[in-house]
Image 1 (cartoon, rainbow, N blue to C red):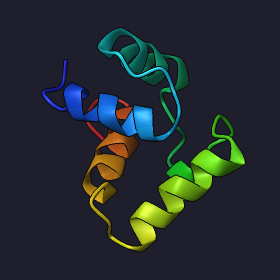
Image 2 (cartoon, one colour):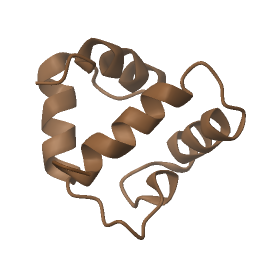
Image 3 (cartoon, rainbow, N blue to C red):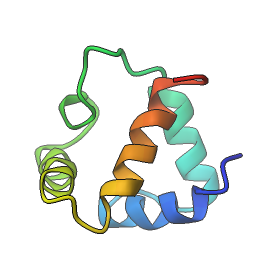
Length: 80
């Protein structure tokens, strides 16, 4: 497991998703791999509010942007 799962849990809580380590891991496994041509915030599994939060955090380079980037990588699969 990634050392960032605790932080992922906090991001998942911000997204209004179940946020314990087991739930975060299950979410990543369920939705991976995300195709390279699909932007993270455009993935079909986000609600409009979740997609907006991800988009805004990346656009503003906000505090959560690094975690959003890490989530993006995690959803792309190993070695991406």
